Length: 325
Picture 1 (cartoon, helix red, strand yellow):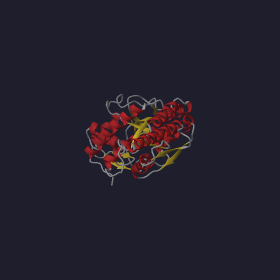
Picture 2 (cartoon, one colour):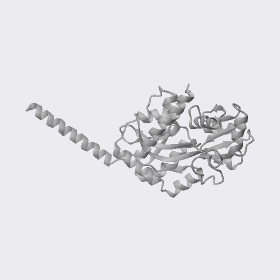
Picture 3 (cartoon, helix red, strand yellow):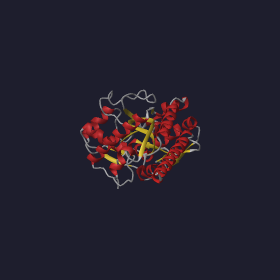
Picture 4 (tube, helix red, strand yellow):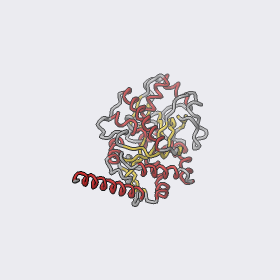
């Protein structure tokens, strides 16, 4: 009888806990939500967070507070999000380069993309553009390809750091062209662009949002969009396929993740809010002008894309022998 009584009490306790948990999920969110950005202000990740901040908060009924936690090639902010309480009040605005490559670059990073983070939904897809500075005399992708082949190992390309999407994009371009290029890493896109504009580095393959003002000012040239379609913000710039290099695409994504263990109902609620935010005329206008593509995905679609990119980018990092010091 005593064993039966204890079992009944335990089952009652579990049921009560489950009911309380369900009620908490139903009332979520009841206070502001922190969105960690693993970069300093400026750049593509921070841009995506601020693009969605207001519309996401309106859709959820609570303010979204952006917290920039940079350092360690994004690992400081990512680790903080992965270790946060999985209650939906701490989210991460993740960059595909960090998500797919960081743990291959630094196996002791302290987090695992598939184990410690749960996909929520995408904000933007950012096709990369091949930009050339005044330090190299080319005006088209065909001229750049010819120049690289004629000067193996001498054409320089900038990146936002070892193992970044820009670094991997340069490696893949060199492979396609069949001639090596010299990698010049920086601590972010801003200093990289400075040296491209200054003629100290030849090219930079990056998202257009950080380079539009320089392009409009005539300080750099856009040779090709490394994606399947032209960008509304750059209607006169051909795709790489149109410019004679089919199959060379470089698309980065910026997406929301939650700590693993966050209730599925909460994740679905944030996903629905993200997708609703893409319908905001203000969000659509800013995205189009900045050269990013709004990409509303389901949780399942986002998870599949993230896992696929972890496999793809990690393989490129390992084959190239890239490591973070």
